[in-house]
Image 1 (cartoon, rainbow, N blue to C red):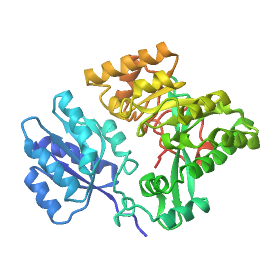
Image 2: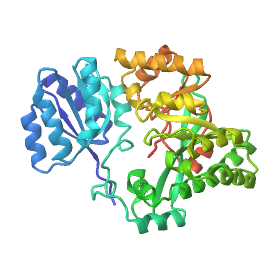
Image 3: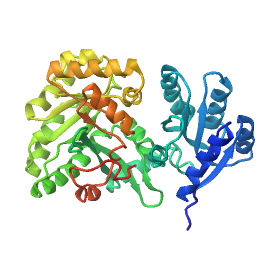
Length: 402
């Protein structure tokens, strides 16, 4: 069966710039390219039922119509992802970028004019990795049933995928975050949005965690035999800490694989409220006493971040991708990143910057003093087999991920 070409709609009022953008896209030979000179033309095209995978358009300070058009693209029309060509003030641009996912589209990135072929190509390469609606039938949006998810977990179809963490200056791999993907026999690789809410609702997060641990430790053992030691980080929800057997069960798993706890990190998500002097605190202390590392994921976006720093023995902070998105041009984001790096240094904690997608962001982060990062500029999540075939020091953009 032939896979339909990715359809890109270029919305640009200036004829010369529109022709340049179309020429760049057609030069690759990989896209079905459409163009429109006005919002009305683009609107008429979309109202006719035209599916658009990527919309390349400009948002201007003097045009509220463009915001209305973006809302219609995400909520009424079948537009999956967006590349902005922005002439906005930096603070407004950052707000628009944050708004795009809420409108139902994936933001691939923002480009400055005049367009550069290499920068455009890097952003287009992110599709469909970042798409929020990749499946025409809607299977990527619809949650699976409890029965389907339980069956998939029991049969081992929900597998760990590994996204590398890098030294920004040397490109050396310094670790990996372990993520879950569903290898569905008919629908292909499904993202967490399809099954994670079901696992949470049914109290199956620990079953997923220990399934990932067994597979991750087996991979680490293989890597160790090859002389490649890399720490793996697993996501941990606050409610999982309430299980008083969590630490002892983890110790038993480590013993069964003959692997040290120092190779494990647990990233505590920011979604749940944290209460001190409870079994949560005991579990965190127990994990550290066992030899594991602890990280606060998406730091600065959730519950009581500073309180957690004072109350629990964390080793690492992971700054949310929203801060990274503005690292190259937004002075407020730059100030926040600098202060978080200084805070981490003063507390003896490493700081990881998530969501790095462009070379411009990488260079800006290095100038701000960042050392560790993660994002699609380097690599997306990959299977254990891909990881084994992957070097530990690479140029970025070598692996597609889901």
